[in-house]
Image (cartoon, rainbow, N blue to C red; front, side, top):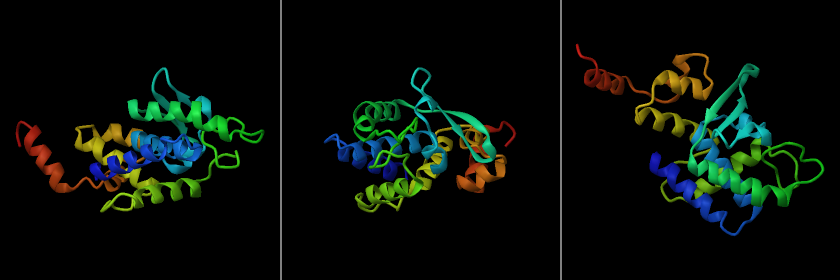
Length: 188
């Protein structure tokens, strides 16, 4: 799955090479979704000042109007900067307001446009599972856990109220939990 996500991000980056604003936007959207695991609704609600490049974090308003701060890394930072410097200025209109991500006509991008872009770019990767925007959220969470991140930290990043949701969501198998317990606990 990590390879599939990376391959889709590569396709998105190549598609943005010609500075087509939609291609640049889509590359930034997918990099941010994968880097942060935020929900599509949270992504489309982002305003420019929700992205803090000095700290490499994005401020999102999640379910129940709860605000949280989520970090992102270098690839997402570069893609976001490029979008804000090269792509967004081409699409911006009087109706854009503070919206971070814009549609072709200058309004705030909507969830459907994000899903369409994710599915279209995924379709260009041979043998990749169809990673919609939610698939990038799953991938981000799973890859964090596989890399050794704490389950509670992942819960916080995803904005889940319950640890049970995070466990369901990231497909943490009982076998994997038993294996890491056996490896880590002194009395296992």
